Image (tube, rainbow, N blue to C red):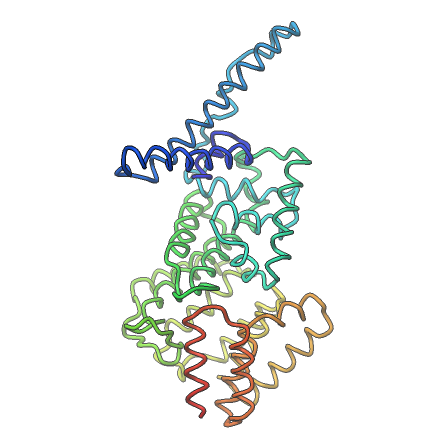
Length: 403
């Protein structure tokens, strides 16, 4: 609703006001007349009509003020202000590009877009950024104030402006998919609404920018992940780790599509962070088992990814891969090196402190190394940090198995 309405208003605050007004009207009208067959369409139409009424009132006011001032050149229609832009065909994607304005800091661009466009809660966004909820709330508030103070226009960027905003947009789409792939909180492991929304946006964007290799790499990564999604939980909804998944149930057509996209993304050399992640996902997808995975190639790709996108989370994943390639003791050494390196970086250290996958990975490596008491301690540390019910249940089962 917000995405469709802001295209009419060109103003975020007005679009939010119109959207809220539509909900108020629905509370009054639906109680009297019943819920319509298409509630979403009714709400969106009500919000857009409210926006158009606001534009008409503003246009009338401007025309009268211009006549009073003797400035007839200012009298006219606002049609050009609210004209449709055919370059971006999806309302939500249009607003993603709009929020990713270069005048805002990158973290603010991504956080604001996730909150306003994609409907993620502040808590979910904070989990994606590995910061506290209060920190993220302040970040979103500052971004809104920056937009208001700088009078940043909410408009569709011209074709020549799309490329400079692409990396931020890809980051948003990736975080939306990640937030859906493993929900940060709640009773369900996956939020299909978010994963499908991210895929739709990536596919739409690729029709507009088919030669952007990083976009192709991101789409490949999501396609590979979706192809394996059905086996991540059992019939009861319990989480199933990669080594225990039934690979015969993976979507082979999706995996083949992912391989085609990866080849297109890495062709020409110097692949970016999303293309490298997709290549790693492709190695997992083609392996008959966890033991036969090409772990040497996986580690090599993580080495390249660390150079393209240095991140404690990437380093953590690399340590896990080393644990499968060279054994759990080697994985633990690599994990200790990640923690030691992060200790010298305040931001990285703070990021890992609340990241439940760090103690969870340590616990699994210790379990495989036969260091049971240390594994118990690490599992308990992970349980103190995890918020998703399905992941919590899995960690509890692993802890119970040690006993």
